[in-house]
Length: 88
Image 1 (cartoon, helix red, strand yellow):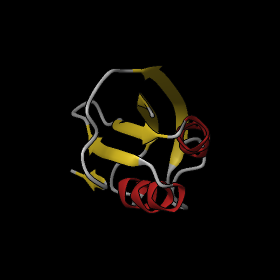
Image 2 (image 1 turned 180 degrees about the horizontal axis):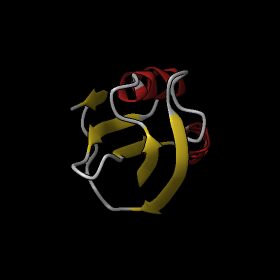
Image 3 (image 1 turned 90 degrees about the vertical axis):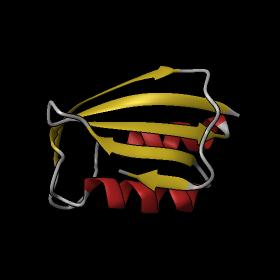
Image 4 (image 1 turned 120 degrees about the vertical axis):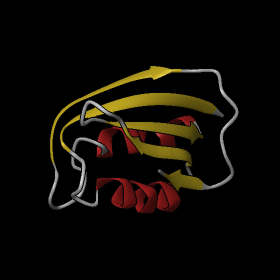
């Protein structure tokens, strides 16, 4: 299992980005979270099998139908993932 922390920038708040990310993460079997940050970006923590985490990281560029992603930066982190996938 690996964990990555991704910061997603663009028009990603108030456009169902976090909920859509949770749905995609659940489809992939990825645990973690998606949280709005004060600067208008979204922090996504993704933990799971490397291929599934990579697939979610790639998907973040797509986002929800209403979002417009301008940048995604990810780094591997050492954390204990939450159970399931939470949004906040």
